[in-house]
Image (cartoon, rainbow, N blue to C red):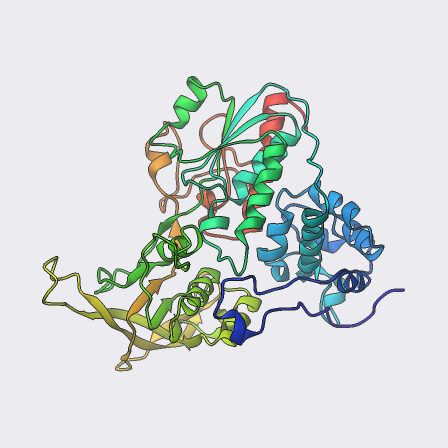
Length: 473
């Protein structure tokens, strides 16, 4: 019998006063009973609008129908046809802006919890199925993938399923890209990422870590000397942006990239970690996206007494997922909206013989804002209110205002055209760059975006590479 409840099954979570003191996953996942009950809310619409909202085109009503029948492994196999990272997507994909935004049940109530069901199915498979996926027969064609983030892993997985000899080159010492260095353990356990990577290895994908393409090897060398017939660039956007305001050189000022990498990849929150990180008591995080929420919530878990989100627009314009904002508020993050930093204040320890300009953070000076006319993207532009400066008393500032692609690959690859801000120029449908047989996708092309959009780009590029090399669609 169909479940006509207008509301989703609630996701069980750790209590806020418990989870703010640990790095364990916040969301605990559906039970089988909850998953079946939620799946029965799906109307299995004839036109399947939810599929149109999914960048990797998962057959959503089909897998949900199997969940409703209790056929969880069959549901997983349906998802796996289109997605190489279902356990990841079920956790960090913004379903509310993608598939769930198209759900018919959302017209008069809440949409079907597609993301929660995807997570349940992937977790059930990982916990209950030990058989390795069948490795496809090799076609002998070598393809290189630069970067092991979501776009790179998706491209690699789709090509491996078609029999290509795929090697992924990762600059860091662990595969996963932003999934391991950028997203905290309490949102995406690293064991989940490792499991997804292992599945790709079982399909035949080779992973080479500590390989900085553009420094150790160039794209030209990969193609001319190592026999790779095509290259996909999925190197992400890991170069942090700053505001260029006074005081950004002070001790205690981090980019969100550095802060989260120390916490997530290097496990700075563990007593046994060799990675130094400031255990600040009062932290200001500048920005309003998911990265800002991750940094703020991580700072709480590191022992901060007070954590502020400083954002120049209002809550209506905040770009972070609603769920992440709600979790941050529940955990005690203080949102200082319609405020913009103008200076980071600090003092110099006279006993420190190093650069006298490089002192310690004591506060962040902000100016109050109000929303004016819409900008070119339709968002109301923040405007300073004269004579409204004030100082927040903090000893750490984390800048989470965006990133851009590292210029290393561009500077070492002949004929690779990029945009003025550094993104690689590539065809939207295929990912083809200005270099023949060189493709690109994800944040390296668009700048910082979502995991699922990066995956969609990797999937499109894999299709285009296959058509180019083998003449098949």
